[in-house]
Length: 163
Image (cartoon, rainbow, N blue to C red):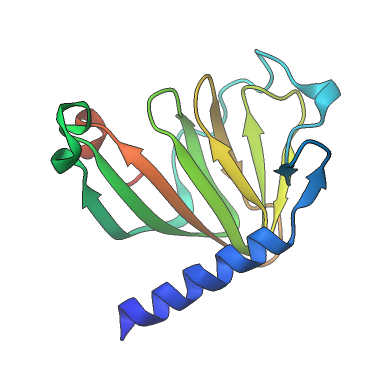
């Protein structure tokens, strides 16, 4: 029953995310992105280093080892994060850990190394995280922000599967 309910919520979140994008000529969809004139290689500096008022629940994980040597000691993981008002997801890097995040409800502010200004994310936004990106998130709103995150972990990251 819990799996069925979670699957329905994730499906709903995906549908909401896909219907709320702004379509840009060329077929790409963007939401909650850094404004083009604010992109920088050294945007925001490291911020909060400790989680605060955030729950981080792994809801599913798939061992990718069966896909060959390149995937040995790697896993595809899905998490549900609930960030309370004033809560923080601490500074972290995505250099070796690609992730897609969908904001299901509430709103949250991202402070990223590749942008000079904070990036606001609202319910329905999806953001891809990979490469030369480090960032932290804070819920500056008045209601909890609920996010689903799908990422690929390497063997080193398996040691600490949450934040």
